[in-house]
Amino acid sequence: MIDPKDTIEVNGYTHQRYYQDFYSNEEMIERSKALLELSLNRRSVRDYSDKEVPYEVIENILKTASSAPSGANKQPWTFCVVKDPEIKRKIREAAEKEEKQSYESRMSERWLKDLEHLGTDHHKPFLETAPYLIIVFKRVFEMENGEKHNNYYVNESVGLACGMLISAIHNAGLVTLTHTPSPMNFLHNILERPGNERPFLLLPIGYPAEKTYVPSISKKSTDDYIKIY
Ligand code: IYR
Image (cartoon, rainbow, N blue to C red; front, side, top):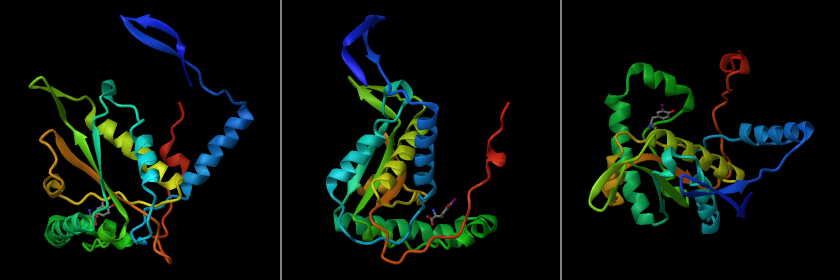
């Protein structure tokens, strides 16, 4: 919470007083557990229903993503929201063409073996079935008065925003999938994006198809990824 009236000046810029809710240890444990349980129930879903999602939800989750920290607060991202069936069809067609080549010749034997248990292939029907596609672009630089100014920590910043977006989608009761067709320049062309933007990630958003199965996989145990010093 920010108190707009309680301010100080730093280097000639206004800083506002910041307050955060304070919880007891018990409350903190409860709250962190609740988010953990919610997060553990999130899965990448590849089969979508075409059921409509209110646009207000899309806007709220994108505002959540855009609240992410970023290098020098440049917020170097653009979220393209695609609902138009004709644009979705074009994206599916181009993505499947690239993915077919990837699965048939660009991906190594080892890579294909590593993906086998997930059951993926070059068919991407979700690109047309899901009610919305969000295509995330990173903004490598900004133009100001005809001058090019590079943004900072662009991949880190956009990655953080995408993580928050994925959590927000799950929290709303919807599902998504991190789809990275490769190469993905076709997204730049289809969506006619400007020269300072590069495609970063594609996320379908919607409800899961009525009877959906996901791979039976587990997450690493804490001993494998937490090192206490
Ligand atoms: N982009 C391809 C292949 C793929 C690659 C990885 I690494 C995955 O975790 C899953 C899929 C596809 O979307 O099918």
